[in-house]
Length: 174
Image 1 (cartoon, rainbow, N blue to C red):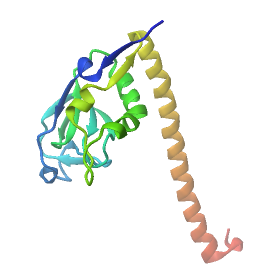
Image 2: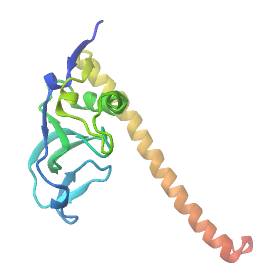
Image 3: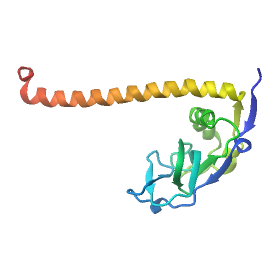
């Protein structure tokens, strides 16, 4: 079976946020996506959709997915209105976008990507049922990773507590 290849701009709308980074509020109720890995917050929202968010500068190509009300920085690309499975496209982008964009990003001191770079990005598209199976497999793996990360975090906390006890009371104190 041959997979179709389409440009990203053919399978979704690509917009940018309109807000400046300092328009956020750490106590705001809505996520504020910028070009940073960390998500901040805002008192307002401009989007109420399921979207893929791509950093256009800073951490160029950093990709997130979100569903609901949110705000976006002016150099953050908001991709929505997908004709194909959004999670399939998301997984494709997080697996390939940074590598692909290294060739096309612009700027020397502050690298950035243009809307056209994203719009022209070619995406391999199997039939929708196959996209959904791929997503299910990758979701399962992602859930396993998140569980392992929680276990690792708890193990680090246990180690820290044990170190505190051992260095204050020795092994006899256990």
